[in-house]
Image (cartoon, helix red, strand yellow):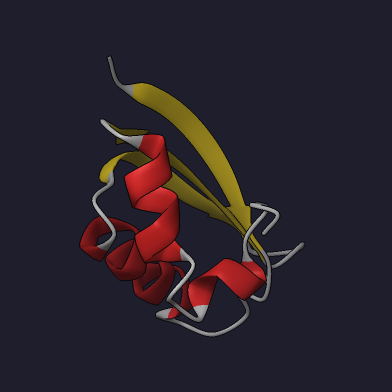
Length: 73
């Protein structure tokens, strides 16, 4: 069974910031369903699907992106 999650990413003030976060999500095993940025608030929203949340989280914890995400570690 897969999990559908929406994550918020802070510090999206530069072009490419959200793309970097998305790349880390994908390399950690997530499939990106949707993404968008609130430019005024500098917050990105990404909806992902993961097959194994625990395995995904272990890989995602190794990235710098986790520090800018709404996932608590």
